Amino acid sequence: MLDVAIIGGGPAGLSAGLYTTRGGLKNVVMFEKGMPGGQITSSSEMENYPGVATVMDGMSFMAPWLEQCTRFGLKHEMSNVDRVAKNSDGSFSIYLEGGKVETAKAVIVATGSTPKRAGVKGEDEFFGKGVSTCATCDGFFYKNKEVAVLGGGDTALEEAEYLANICSKVYLIHRRDEFRAAPVTVEKAKKNPKIEFITNAKVDEIYGDATGVTGVKVALKDGSIRDLKVPGIFTFVGLNVRNEVLKDENGNFICDTLPAGQVRVNLKMQTNVPGLFAAGDLREDAPKQVVCAAADGAVSALSAMSYIESINKH
Ligand code: FAD
Ligand code: NAP
Image (cartoon, rainbow, N blue to C red; front, side, top):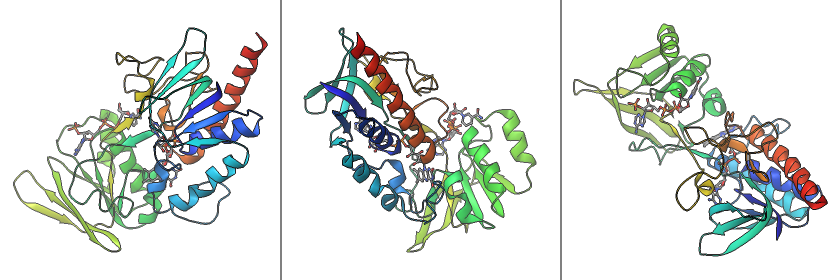
């Protein structure tokens, strides 16, 4: 039986792997369906991780993380986890795609989240090259430039405000003229002279060249097309939390979640199921930053080690 099974190999999962193995656990496996590194590997520039002064792409930034963990004995298995189940003896079963089943004393789920794609022409081609889903991360690259924001939820409106502090102008494009965002948030954004609202509008195309995005074509209600010559567009059309592994065979969650799917945890990253921990973007109130996910991973590892120590005593 594994001491700890870690599901997901982004910053949270890798940090959990580092802390569990360096803390002395011998049998820890991190299940990651793709290459380890997580979402940040799709970013062209990473410059806000404390202590790392060199700006680099997300892939280069994450490359040493696995190497560091394996030095302390973390085992990495490239597998997609279908689901996790708590057994009657207190252990967990980890059901892998393909039918294999592993058992573990404790489980750390760090499967992250994925920003929804808007489904606009050019969005995939220029993702990370002018199309972004993270204003905190990428807003600075557009200092004193004009940018577009797509979406009408709290994230879009709040991030438009954030970007307006950095950029010369923000075009807020929304497909309706009513907003999902809280009225007070909408009012605040409407009062901001640097934000221009373009409502009842649809982004038809994001276009560019080898340097990245150079503009966005917006279809207006009257049938005309407005061509915005912006070097960046931020799409905030909702998030998908990757919580599928926490559903049982009937599709019910095995631990407490919020209505939008984020996993409920306490400050030790414990879920309401003993021995089951959640870390990173997946958890409630996640700030969705690499440094925060890494910190969650470390906290969840320390908690899992305490949990294993307590069950070993009995
Ligand atoms: P993730 O990074 O999402 O990792 C989860 C991992 O779990 C993935 O590798 C996934 O393949 C794996 N996984 C999911 N389901 C399964 C399964 N069933 N079985 C096995 N494996 C599974 N943050 C910053 O701090 N600074 C930045 O500059 C920055 N820029 C960003 C730019 C972009 C384009 C994006 C998309 C995000 C950016 N972020 C940035 C946010 C940051 O990437 C996330 O907050 C962080 O990666 C979250 O880490 P995580 O470990 O919780 O989840
Ligand atoms: P969201 O509330 O789901 O809003 C997504 C927005 O994107 C909606 O306006 C939607 O338009 C639009 N949209 C969706 N698909 C689109 C597409 N394909 N093309 C164009 N537009 C599209 O997502 P969110 O803003 O990320 O918020 C997620 C959750 O977090 C919400 O519950 C939100 O309240 C919460 N949140 C809260 C705070 C806060 O309390 N301060 C801050 C941020 C987020 P329609 O409106 O027409 O559907």
